Image (cartoon, rainbow, N blue to C red; front, side, top):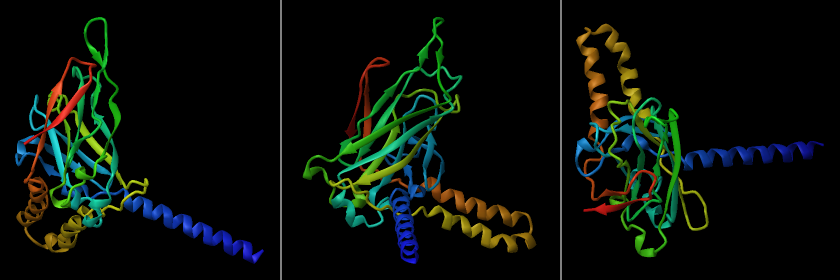
Length: 258
């Protein structure tokens, strides 16, 4: 009986370890997400977490492009040679009540385009449209040829975007990329970096006791210091995607623009 209990305990411990490793593998350091094309006007990053990044346009009618590189994703940048494919979830928030005619996008995954997507709303008899408040779609990529595998993880950028050029800002619509997973040819998930923003968030907490004794003006300085670097990340894009889109409901393709 004791032997059986010991075996069960060992199995439970092994299962817990597997869950822990799996969680670590699929968590990217989204705090490093920045803008594409070397242009801050390409994206307004709302928030980042261990789960993903939420962003939107900087103005109505523009494409929204959030950029992160593989050396900011992989736990070991040398693992770039092992990457074969990847998947992630795209979620649009706040579409209900908007007059947006369609959403579409994809990702430029370092050397190739993702599967991409185009989603249309339900059209009513009076010409108005109906959306669910949240719309979710899966996207993915594969590097089928050895020549597609990047040599340098720091130059391997992933640019997630919506290129439908709808009016997100005035409709309070945001776009979320989450659950990014990278796999080798055997389907094994490749480990990613831990989310680092939690460490950055500790700095104001450590300064809190001193701030209580200091004048009110001194409390504003740490807040400005913690938010400014986030907007400044990812400002050296190497490539971007231009959209080639047909009428609503038709297929959409994206291509790299140098």
